[in-house]
Structure formats: structure tokens, C-alpha cells
Image (cartoon, rainbow, N blue to C red; front, top):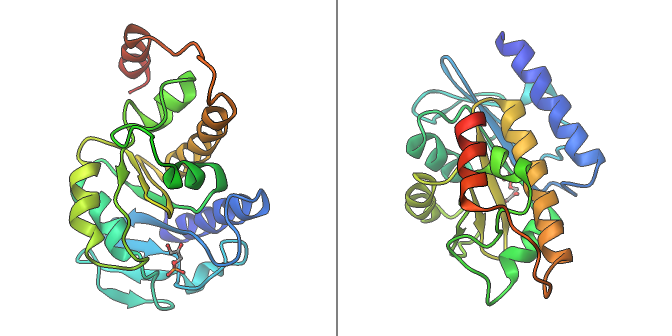
Length: 210
Ligand code: 13P
């Protein structure tokens, strides 16, 4: 895919997420790795109205080299790329249900959402820990996210929202959507004793679908 095609795909995914309510106002940010750096959404931009030509461009050292001023969450995105060499894109949302879980006391902080459905396991993986609260844009979050992301494709930032990585831009977006659906199911089923996927079923999914 050329850089221009990647820019167009990022803008299309972002608009689709915004139109379906996964992001409101200027919340959320998306980045994607290129051969010579990264594209990231500009700070204070609405995912619903991005201009492909004005996306922020960073070099491979995460320095701003083109486009509008980058998201203040560059540290959050960098943490994933550094921890996960296979990560090609990172999506951060404040999607309601996942963020609700990130605000709940008495959840399993190491893995708050159990394996309810195959697509959650296939897209998000076996574990998705909660990372402690940091002010948005605080560089201090980077080591905490980096440590958590070594063993997880996605994390929930306490009282803030999900951050999801993927092997491609579409993969990361689909994982962020699947995570929000799993969060919805988890909250819907809270207080009941739902049947969970068994460990062999989870193993089989990860072996088959990676
Ligand atoms: P930016 O507008 O700087 O990308 O920040 C939005 C956000 O979601 C903060 O977490």
C-alpha cells in the first residue's frame, strides 16, 4: 500500500468509527507504521473529519516531520510499537463500554474481560490488562504501557479508555471494535454466570487464527 492509500484508509476507518459512536468530539487517536515513519492523527482533531493531507507524520524516531501537530498521545502509541515489533497500527478510543470497565472497582485488573466469544479472543487475544491512570498525554504512561503491551495486544487505561494494536491498520480497528462489543457483553452479563470459552477452546483459536 502506498502512503497516500494508507492516509486514505486511516481517514475512512476514523470516519466510520466516529459515525458509529466509537469516538465523540475530538477523542481518540490512530497511528499507523510506514516504511519511513508513522502517520498519527493530529491533536484535537475529530476522527469524523480528518484531512488525509494534514495527518501528522513522524520519522522512525517519533519526531514530528510533517502535517499538523501530532496527538498528545504519541507516547502511548510509541509504547506499543516498541513493545511489539509486529504492531503496525495503534488505535486509542474512549468507547463507552470499554471505558466503563476501565472505571469499575472490583474487576480483575490483570484481565478484566473473560473469553466470552471467539472473535474477542481472535482479535484481542488471551489477556488485556488495565494500566493505572495517567493524565492524557503524560509521558510517564509510556513505561507502564510498554511493560503491559509485551504480553498483550491491547490494554485498558484506567478511567480513560482502550488502546489496541494490530498487524495492520484494519486489524487494529477491527480489534478495537471487537473489544467494545466484548465490553458490552461483559457488562450485560455481569452478575450472571455466563458460560466462558474453555482454555483448550482459547488455545485452539489462537493456534488457528494467530
Ligand atoms: P489528542 O487530541 O491529542 O489525540 O488526544 C485525544 C485523546 O483521546 C486523549 O486521550
